[in-house]
Length: 169
Image (cartoon, rainbow, N blue to C red; front, side, top):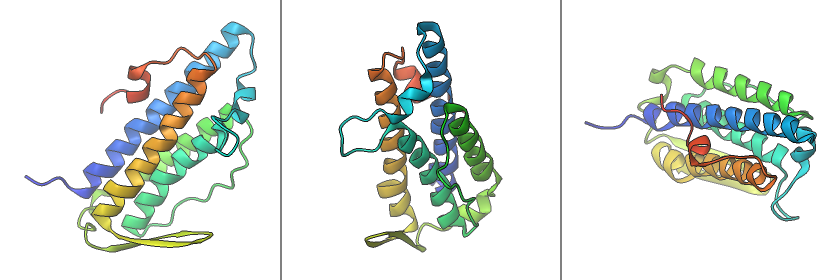
């Protein structure tokens, strides 16, 4: 039995984005219980040359939506990175979940060998579908999810491995 490309993307991204949403909810609850403004945490960074929490969450949303769009050739929704609150980020997560959930399995499966071009301001990278998913898109998503988790954990939000892993299914 083979694993289809859809199974390596949409369910994986869905679980991670739901976990990210729950992590943000837990951060808001912890902030309220301790008298802190949770939105102040949006600017925290691991180190000066790394992106702050807000950008980590934005990118954790962009990676799945762009992966699914590139594989399926469906146009991804545009987000202008104008979020300023955790509530705004929750809306972005919900929008991303809705988009990736709307793309049919048939549009993703079978794209394992199709070229995928990822363009950056400084250049581009070309992959085949499956190596793009397993060697770039999924690791990139988990990097930003991990950063968001770690930044909030460092602020004292009581998070554990189960929060990071999220609920199955």
